[in-house]
Amino acid sequence: MTETPSAKTVLGNRDFRLLLAGTALGQMLGPLQFLTQILWVQANAPENIWLVLVAMIGASRGLGALTFGLYGGALADRYDRRVLLIAAQLLLVTITCAISALMFSGVTGFLGFALFFFLAFLAAGLQAVDAPTRLAIVPDILGPELTPSGMSLAQVAVQLSMPVAMLATGFIIHELGFGGAYLFSVSGHFLVIFFLLLMRYEAATPVEASSSYGFGQALNDVREGLAYARGHNTVLWIIILLVIMMSLGFPATANLGPTWINTEVGVPIKDIGYIVMNWGIGSLVAALFLTRFSKVAHRGRLIAGGAILFSVSFVIFVSDRTVTNVVLGNLGLGAGMTITSVSSTILIQQLVPNEVRGRIMSLFQLNMGFAQLMTMPVAMLAQWLTLSVLFPVLAGVTLIVVLLVIVTQRQIIRG
Image (tube, rainbow, N blue to C red; front, side, top):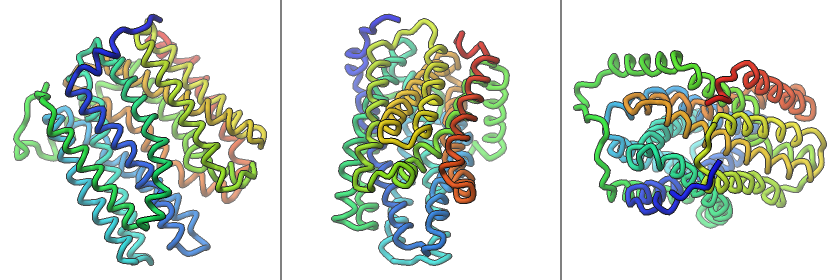
């Protein structure tokens, strides 16, 4: 592993700086919109089912990501990726305004919540188009040599933006209310569009007329992407490893982690932020490390090491109900997830040709869709078994399965 001299060169690329600014801004919108959704549901749902309805937010987002993810990757390989990003952001503006209007209207009940979850599903679907397209466009802008440093820098920008977003979210919701806070987030989408419009990027793939691209062609493109992944053993098992790690570990430690910290560890709600911020600190440290040392001979070793770190940290997180354990657990979870996801993205981008890169990136992004979708069954099991019984078992299963995949699929480490 050697220190990379390319970080300064990467930031000298005007198009990448604009893309990076939009990516960081998009990540700042995520916590504001997600927390506003959770708090709005808690405030308006019947008391006996509010926990289930909160879990439905994650389920709706996960279902949207899984439904539209592969199609989004096919679009990213068919159309001008910058134009596709702009189109996705414009549609997100429309849906964000619709959710804000629903919150302002005060309409709840069955119809209100049904409409809300449907809109959340559509928004997640558009994000599932945006994410693989944003990943696929980086090598187009930077080229293969600078892409690892660029991806690491993007992760640093994301991790730096998250604390700012978390700090501002509570204030914005308090001052503007649920509908106002959600409407405020529209300004972020417009800024992302503005940055994209300033780019001078030229499409690396031919732009097809929309009228010539029907559902049958899209389905065929998706099949080709799946066939490519099945035929590339290293890519396939990296994707499987990420799906397993995130599906088993993310719902308990991220989506339901604050509930564990509050109810099982006994940390007051007003102090939970001091605990969960350690996830971001771990992620930031890992991202800075990956940026400074982006030229790694065997990136597969980083992928395996990150997955093991995440799984071991899950065990630490739930093994003893103390503040020390949840702090150390969050640090390791953030670092492990960042090392695994960034290293996997870089390696897959290096292995996969441009003409199918968008579709493979969409397959890679399915891990978060599965993780969000798994929140509902995990919450239902926890309601039945209790958190104190379920989470340690889930942590042990995660560690065992991750180790089993790494030991039996040695091509991951050799990648």
